[in-house]
Length: 105
Image 1 (cartoon, rainbow, N blue to C red):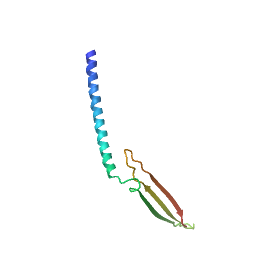
Image 2 (tube, one colour):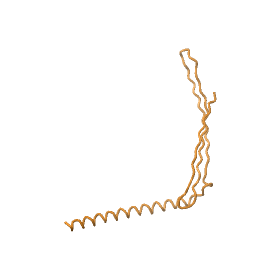
Image 3 (cartoon, rainbow, N blue to C red):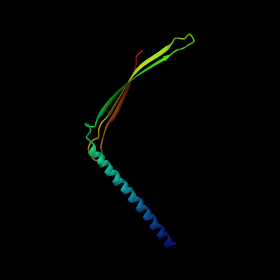
Image 4 (spheres, rainbow, N blue to C red):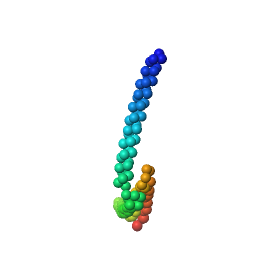
C-alpha cells in the first residue's frame, strides 16, 4: 500500500510540474507580447485622442382622431477621450466620456 501511494504521489508531482511549466510558458509568451506592444507605444500624451459626435433626432406623430399632432426635436453631443499609456512595466491610461442632450422644440 505504501508503494502504491508513492507511485501515485510521483504521478501527481509530474502532472503538477507539467502544469506549472505550461503556466510559466504562457506568462513568458504574454510578457513578450506586452513588451512588443510597449515598444510601439508613443506615450501618454502622444497617443491621446478626443472625438466629439453630434446626433440630431426628429420625431413627428400624426394623430388621426382629432388630437393635436406631436413632434419632438433634439440634439445630442457625445464626447470620448482616450489617452495613451505611460511607459514602464505597468502602463497607466485614462479614458473619459461625456453625454449631453438638448431639446430643440
